[in-house]
Image (cartoon, rainbow, N blue to C red; front, top):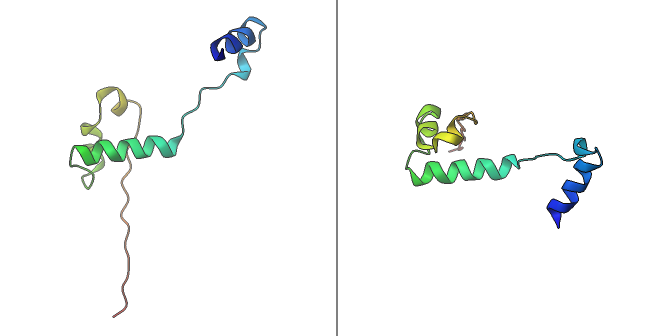
Length: 73
């Protein structure tokens, strides 16, 4: 049913209305899970990238950030 709808839009010349989208929050969660599974989540961005499937590491950029907290004594 969905493909028929999209096929109809394409046939009518309205393919510009069809957008491929990726939820970046979901993609980030998948990368975190893969890094956890490979036990490299706390590694550098290049170590994490190397733990990803080759197809994914080619198309995403890993950026690690340092978060600090301050405790008052």
